[in-house]
Length: 366
Image (cartoon, rainbow, N blue to C red; front, side, top):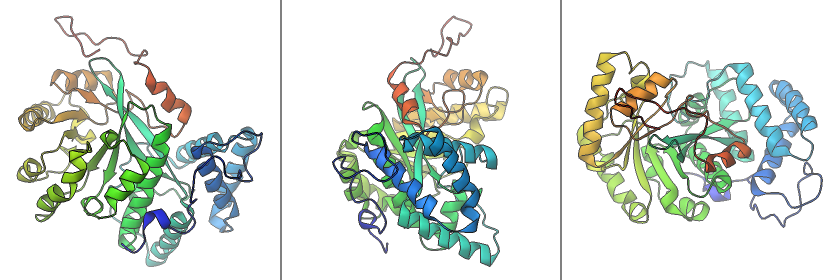
């Protein structure tokens, strides 16, 4: 890595609420850390003279006018509006590498935009609730990175472009810092799942960043979402052993989407396996998906790992994965990703909006 995340240029050096309020903060009182960060991002966006940002700036000013003195709410509403206008789905994997087909000029333009994001930390975190099926209670969240841009690029495209520009590690650490800082606003009982590449998990800077921004390490889940090289499992076991002894958990994501080596997974001994949306979609009617789900359930039991289903979008999918013995899950049916702290606060309470799912014997997951 060429840049230590905690000393990146342009990053607010403190979230101490005794500091002087940024210009966007009005109405008195001391701002929270997330309010200060939102104000910082907004001021950077409004200061950007690039023509392609004109539309985003106009929209942002409208949201600021609607929520005077509340930059964090204005920024959240702005991001929600941008995602609606561009049609970008909420559950795009933030570190998924997608084919990059841009012309060389566009790729260079994206590289410059990545530099602006890194300099101004112009990104925020959305969290999606993970619910325990037996009670409907939210037990954890998964972090998704959102970029303050009207360019229509998905998070996967941002990370792919950063990797191509050799800025992948810097962008991952910036996203990690943002997620850990925002996590201070979450209910204290929730764990936080953070998607990271194997390379970032092996970076010697990672333990220091986690310890600085998330002292309660038993709330951290590191989720690997990329296929491992043959050399990486042994290195990861050694590198993550000190963190895991202190309570950090390891998850393997996207099970059923890409086939990681069973031997590698056994070597890593993850605490959590996650069924990918590609497997969960239609699992209630597709015999092959159902059979594959049964096999993964047995494998998770053999490992002693918790199995979580991703991308649950219907009641029938929920019933099917719960019937397999999956203990928890996430997806639109159980709660959409949100950048709003007021939504996060509601995850303190057991779910009330769902009705019990009943099997033939009258039992159900909740």
